[in-house]
Image (tube, rainbow, N blue to C red; front, side):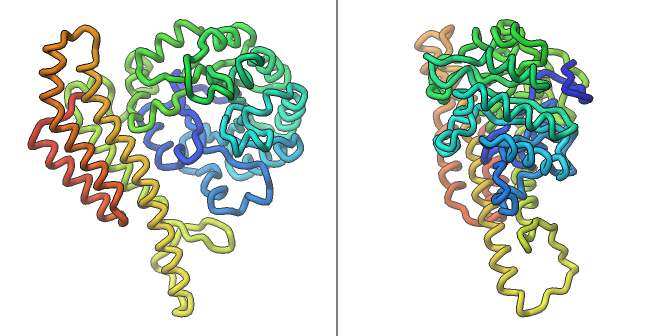
Length: 400
């Protein structure tokens, strides 16, 4: 078991925080499918941004499974400490500090992975945050700023000295972004250098890869980011492989996937889309705060137009977010079909035969994805997905 402060994680796979991805509906899906911890999207430490809709949506949600983990990003120690305190007062039970984001708009402010260039500032920020809050503080880093400046081990030791209670290491430098070979050797060096739990992150897209990385690096767990986009059941598959019964999904496991083909996946995708629509349309932004709307409340006629505009904006947001996640599911379906005939153990004739069998289905999925991206209402999205899965069953399930 992995312990982070008073919290004991049931499994060895956790969800990485990803801006624009790990919103409340997606966190719930991943948690339900066996992620032992999920972290909300990074929230800016700048107090001037706290009352924006984006920041309010990124606060700890009381319906999130414990431990409720919020990631903050910034560059000024006192501001970061104040942000951590604000998040804890808003319900966060773990505060994660971002020193791994490679985005230009973050790094140009010397935040995210840019902080790794200044170990003294790293120490100041960690000391300030850990000293301000009474909940566990965790840290996500990269292996360094660029291949000539790898200092993950140094930063990890500073973090442990300052009281950080776990580390996640993306096995690339900032300059590498998400390209090139992941430095699992460096992650292993970090594991050897500290006595706190370390999560390995980077290109972990299957349960077998997760086991390989854990065996190679000696890390306590794996942090899954892009590998969960369109494939949140990866957490169930990892738990099933490791026999982590306490973390196994209540919904389905890898074994049940093989037995039931894609029926469980289809049900999950539909539920996720419905949750996205419900979540983003059920909020009313007033006085810069998010409050659940109440259909029983009497609204003066003078407010009708304004509230209708708000409702339209929330519908547009739900539709945009729905497009993003559902298209990832479509892409994963295609990948599932394509992978078998790319395997090296198939001869060319077998590969061509398999490709001919699945090519029509791939075309259908690509067409459905393109059509879905053109829909502009929640009902249209739901009807499209229901129709697509209905048609899919007339030609056969996609292999899990």
